[in-house]
Amino acid sequence: MTQATSAVALDGDVVDRLIQLIRDNGTDLAESALTVPTAHFVSRERAEAEITLMRSLPLIVGHVSDIPDPGSFFTRTILGIPLLVVRQKDGSVGVFRNMCRHRGGHVEPAEKGRKPIFMCQYHGWSYAAEGGALKGVPYEETGGKVDRRCNSLIAFPAEVRHGLIFATLSDIEPRPVAAYLGPEIDSQILPWQLEESVVFIDETIELDINWKLVVDGTIDSLHAQFLHPKPGGVGSRTVNHCAVFKEFGRHGKMFMARAKLKKLLDAGEDGSASSKYIGTVMQIFPNNVFVEAPEHVELWSVWPNVDDPTKCSVRFRFLVRADILSPELEARVRKSWEILREAGMEEDFPMEASIQRNAVSWPEGSYHYGRNEKPAQHLHRQLHKEIDGARTGPGTISFS
Image (cartoon, rainbow, N blue to C red; front, side, top):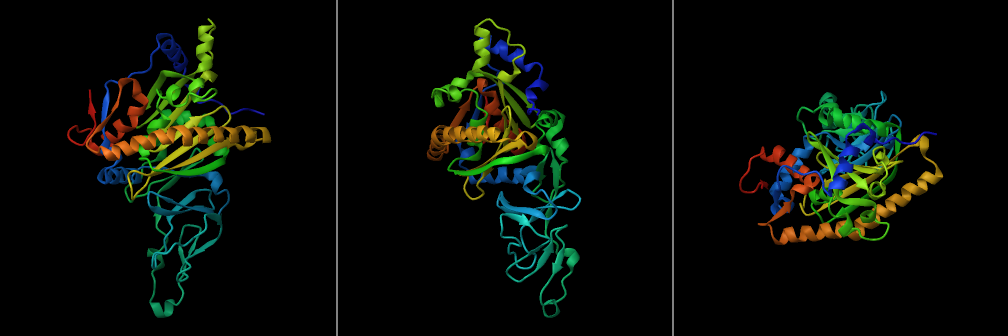
């Protein structure tokens, strides 16, 4: 039985670059340091601009294994919009606003299931799972004729790629997902075979932290030895201050050396073929992070709270190829989740919450991202381009 492959093999220069950085006690550097206003973590105006931007982009709202058969569905609220996501007969996916066109009730209250028809429990208007067409209107003879052509469920542009369900939650012209990801990211995702995977772990945590601070923590290459010092923890497994960061347009990927690679080099052994000693974290702009493991892929989706910029939710999904899933692998993946959850709840999230509280208490201040924090700078630089048009001045990031 084959094992999951690693996308590190697609980056032939990464191992050599990391080896040189280990020997030089260095890391990839950004072109300049970055200063981010603390207002970006507390301002409602800034949060509204970020949410408006997010709704205009292809966002990951689910995985095809969530809806395996025609008529199977799940409901989910994303960026304040209640969604009904349904597998269609041709294998495509329909993403609809979970809202009756009559008086605005949900047409489906359940979290998941399989139905040919969805009916609003308020007045009984019903809609087809296939295409969302309005099917039934009780008492139409006394209420007045309803034009069914204009009263289907409101559909959002949706597309499946690599087994991931993308939706654009606005009425702008959608961007094709392949073009949005770009060929480099496409080639990085391809070896994971996500379309052949199942969601084995699916957990959500609510946090009193701005969403960007959580993303920062996932792609920070400097903190592990300080925040995770426990024996056997992340700090002992990676080489701090040693990362290669590749930018792929809006997106980016960080490659980190594991401690085993440094031990090989310190012992005078050849590390040139040691891609298995490299960890990777890939950021899909704006709010998704993929963490590669030898036998599974972790997907973090970090969603801002639409009512409070100091809060967010993080949905963790561990994707495992169905053909390699076994009781032994299940146990290893569960162990990985427990390690992640413990580190997050006891170390990462408390630190990020303290950063958030300080931003609240100092909204006129700023946080500093050094040149050696290139991966953590990336999100803020991209938001600066998308929202501020790369303009510098009061209320924007600055460079030094």
